[in-house]
Image 1: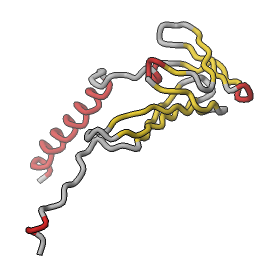
Image 2: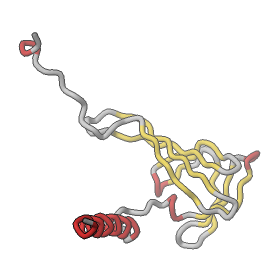
Image 3: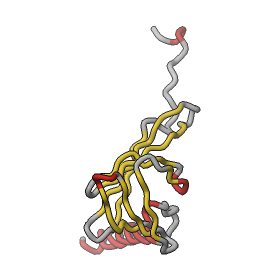
Length: 132
C-alpha cells in the first residue's frame, strides 16, 4: 500500500520544490525598495538614510518623491517607512496604494503594498429581462 502513495508524494515534493525554486530564481521582478538597506532613522526630523542598490548613501525626507517606486514618502517611524502612490485599476478607476516598508535593527527591509483599487474585473449584473 505505501508503494501506491509514494509516487504521489514524490510528485507533490517535486512540485513544491519547483515552486520554491521559481520563487528564488528571480522570475518575479525585485522591487527597488526590497534592495535597499536602512542605515539610520531620525524620526523627529522625518528623515531616513538608506543605502541604495548601487551602494550610494541617500537621505529621504517626509514628502520626498521616490522616483524608482513612483511613490511619496509620507511618514518615517522608528522601524517603518510609509509611502503612497497613485494607481489605476483594470477598469481605469483611480486609487491609492499604501506601501509599508518595515526594517529590522540590521537594516534589512520587508515591503508590503496595500491597494485600494482592484485589478480584478468588476462583476456585471445580468440584463433586467433575465431576472425573475
